[in-house]
Length: 477
Image (cartoon, rainbow, N blue to C red; front, side):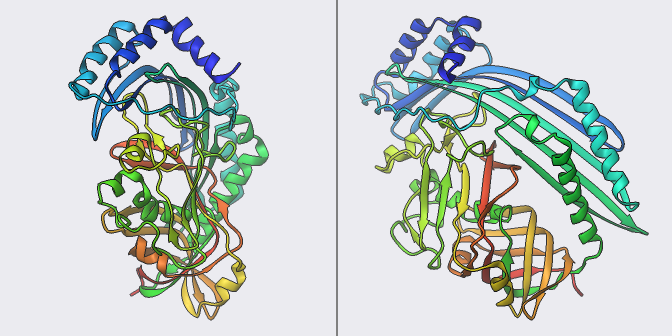
């Protein structure tokens, strides 16, 4: 069954909406508006958490609803409800039409269609009995505790979602998408004497549990989490000061996402609150730095067949060989900036309006090997994994904590260090990229991005990088 046919069945045959009357109501609502849509959503989600040797929590949720939006110039009228009925949509229509009262706009043209499918429609929540999921969590816990006598605590979680959406425009265009999403996380605490350290690893994507809950796969997650914990158990205090930083491939791209990616979203640049505002066509990064946002990678966590406005996602080049060449756009900001939508209009749910958001943001490979890059550093830091971070979008200043990092001395990787924070400025850091590796990789599928109170799944990726002149905040006396 196609995604459109499946969502037709969900929202009209089962929920009871009359399609023809709904189409007429949406057309009436958006007459005179510049843009807008009806967004219909049905979602199932679950989460199981195993902690301290027992099932700590288990939840299952079903939600459905709609969001109706009308756009007039820079103004947006938005109303939503958890009731899928014609009366509820009619009441929402009376609210949102006020935004374009007296306005004589022409509804923007529809997005291009696509026959591409980046993931299948299988519901991951129903493929595995609840008892089997609990048994798998218990097996993961037992395996982790048996690996090393220093293991003191194990936490495991699995989460799944099945989301069906349909976008209906005022011109009658309807676009459907059915989106699976799963994630598995393992956290291990180890200790010797009074000292305790932790390590964690997760994986996920737009697939079913079958890919990640095989014994070989979950054992690999445990092994990696335990490896990180034991590395940190032997770590020494991190140095402090300005030094070259070598970032590992994959998940360290979260620094790229936060410190640079948000500044390349259309709304911040239209409002001129981004550090990149007004720099289109100018050099903003060192030669060799190319950054793309790619929502079209098969089964990746941040990928979407179409965005939440019905626009097919694409590969959008943002920075090419150091030159700023593009922004991530939703429909409204693209229209106001006289640009094309890029399929980056995203929302957390029907209760949220769409805005420009990243999908999978990746720096492309260069031509240097990891060993060459490490060997080029006299004294610096090699950061392999990151924890939390903060960024100020207006000036690009960021602070990130490294959850796994090593000292580099005389071109060789030395001891693991604890408590390292990396401090810098995103746009400035781009200009200090000295070497770009040939090993670009994606993160394991665990990213969630927050913006204006909305969270959406995303992906990040990059090759090994050397960035000169960043500040390390350390713990060494």
